[in-house]
Image 1 (tube, rainbow, N blue to C red):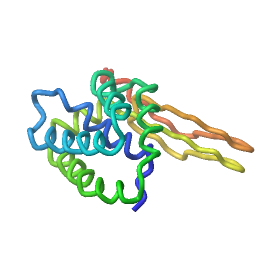
Image 2: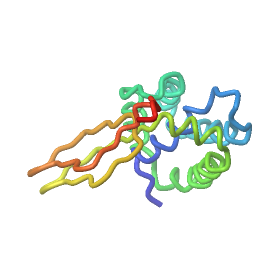
Image 3: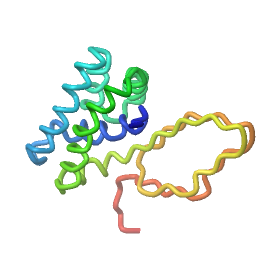
Image 4: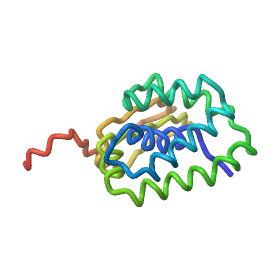
Length: 155
């Protein structure tokens, strides 16, 4: 099973953004806490501190990077143990309308790539934060980006 650190950060960020909400279902909070607890067991205090920082401030790019670096140490065996917990968090977020709303409001997209040629990110819709770390031998293009500013003025 391949769980890359960026995907793990994205999923846990969705959980972290709902962790302190009083309107999110208890099952969603329990699923996030189960993931966080298992990650703490596997990766230690550095990863847990980064997740706690993301709970307090979901757009903290340094905390996200710190967690991503820590998550890179996950072994295949760790990933196999995490998989059902992450599937549970994904299902809980999908079943919880309030959690989906909160996670959507965060709208974070993180990209990290190193390419030998051209890179095109064809379409991005609804993100409020786009964090890009990129290196390409040729062009990097983003032809269609619609940012969600959070201001629904109706225009």
